[in-house]
Image (cartoon, rainbow, N blue to C red; front, side, top):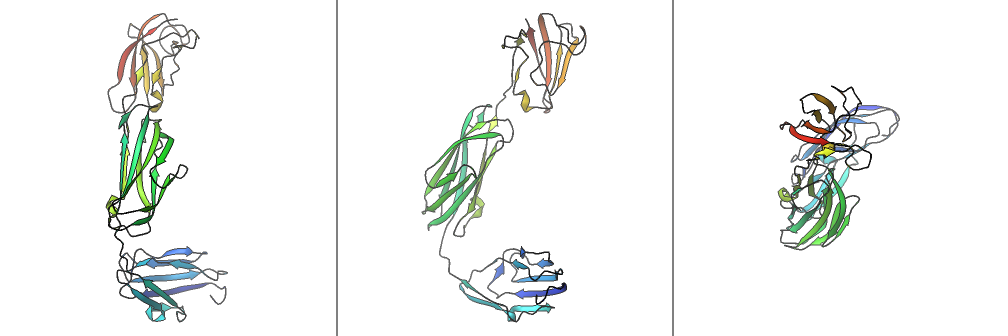
Length: 318
């Protein structure tokens, strides 16, 4: 803008040479408080900018549009390409695009697997991500991103080629020849029974990929029934079985635990049980906090997953 006063109602259409098409609508590069309506869809050979407005004190703003072409050549985009100008001077517009003939034939395939596919919390599993160039020409600048699941802890990683950044989880390979495969191996420890899906995808490549349908793959670990319910407790403060312990109960915070004496009288209940029952009742007879007698008790555990509650017995001793 020649001055910094506010300007509005600015519009124009940039019509590209017929061999050029856009891959997405225009996007702001530096907005600086300006506003506009962008029009242009993938495959169009034009981009519309409507109702461009400069607020007072703003001298410039910028936006861009990504284009592509299947026809090699040199293409000029100048003021003769513009139509529907309103409140704008396009006489100084001049840009040249040189499109080179792309003779590459690159197809990066990503395959991911995990072993074992079923594990218990605390177990270690091994993921393998295999990158293969199925094309007939060399591929360069390959980057593969591993989306690590929150239900696991990263242990270690190794690669057959390239570099793996265990902070960003980005695997970079300088080059893959035709039919060449390389492998990233990740060892992880299961920390939860949920969020165990691991996804790997191609995130960068210097050449066009001829088949994008095989650029991503995933592998998921299933946690087996991790419940292990002890059959007794001895709350005598010796550090051994002082509370009624249920393995993996923390994975089911909506759980409900009920305990009954041998006469069927409920003497304890807890929502979101925390492995802290030490043999004292919180309902029924005897009164709350009294010491229960030695003997057999019965529990009902509902983890609220839609499955039937777990039922069983336990022995209380001192």
